[in-house]
Image (cartoon, rainbow, N blue to C red; front, side, top):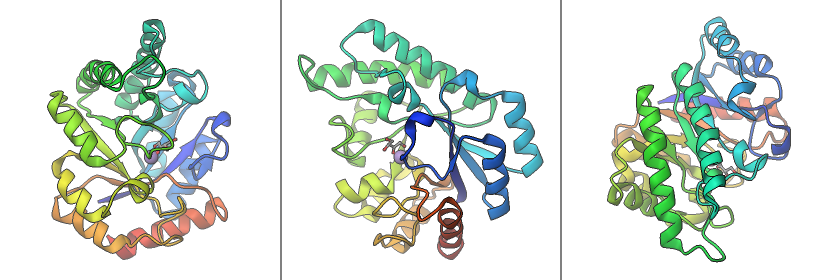
Length: 269
Ligand code: LER
Ligand code: MN
């Protein structure tokens, strides 16, 4: 397993669960100083990150890019893959295609989290899931062209009403035949929704594609009440070799959050 830490370049996401903010070069430098293997980037749009600059930073600091988030499509533009308006769904798809390409050029997968949206009003749950499956199929084909999977993230009940638990999401991607989609298992969402975090990861098995490494209170692992030992043991047992990526609040400050994360990672992994 490998370590990663988040960098947000989205001012509208202020207050959100990202350790480093606003400055890609400074975020890379800080991640390298703490000894992380990779950074996870949350960009405002695909064209806001220069592939050349990002590759240069990766090389200079010997860091990989673990994943690239698409949530700015929702936070900034209110685009969702399950919007009742087909024109909005098309814009959401185009926004994400751009990020899949950016991520692909950096050797990373893209994440579908908040852009999955929710079912509400005149849209029935089955209809929203049909739209989501259709979009994830198209998006995951684009990811495959970069030899990447597409990461789909179940979110807690306050952020979506589509898939809240790993088992729901696993059932969804399996029954819909989404062969190039893997799950992003975020320990913070899981702490709200799962009965047993380690057991849920064991059951998700080979579908675990990425992990957001957050404690119960969305602070660094070690600063809440999640028992991370059995979780890491479960990941090891299922043969997970991907990232434990700190999508966490920069509390009490970014440096402490990063230091506690890497300390916990080294102790556990
Ligand atoms: C995104 O990775 C996530 O976990 C969401 O909670 C962001 O709102
Ligand atoms: Mn997450």
